[in-house]
Image: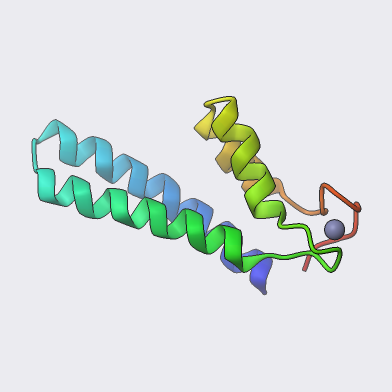
Length: 93
Ligand SMILES: [Zn+2]
């Protein structure tokens, strides 16, 4: 169940990023700020949502890796395909 919510949040994240681009293009700044806040909330929720039995937070790990590599599309792809804990290789549920 948690993994389904996690994936749904990734999809909402894509739509929210599109909304930011739209708001910025029409110079609707308060809308853009609201969408930015939503992005931060979604990312935080994704980190808190899944936690493996080994104590690792795969959501945080995936986010840190792709933030360092500055590749947001791959973050979304990775979060959609996340199935196993990157630390202990156990299936996440
Ligand atoms: Zn684990």
